[in-house]
Image (cartoon, rainbow, N blue to C red):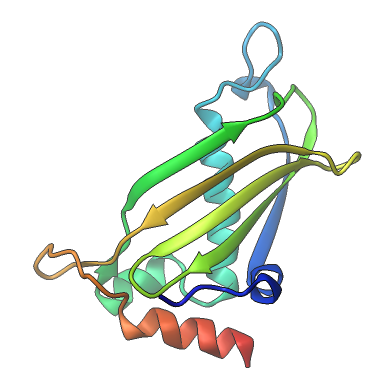
Length: 146
């Protein structure tokens, strides 16, 4: 299985910074847990752009990548107007695409949340799931390293 070494994990990552908006919080000014998925998506898009394989490139290559698994560990709540950094790291890419996430407080650098998602390749022409990642993903990861 192609996975990133601990050195590569730091190398193939991307980060997004946001401030928790009013429309994402409850009456206690804490972000609703379902919005975390949106924050991960923002960082995942930054990561995919970085390796030149964003959602448009995926579609153009003939593959969809649905998320089949998500795990979130909420350590500390996100609060209204809190500035956070979401870091997405590509850690597996042979049989599936596994991305790890970490949300940290922008100012204190304390970890608030960690998570991961697993995406699998699906051939868009016939809807069949593949049991190995298409070569295009490996090519993009290798090109990024060069």
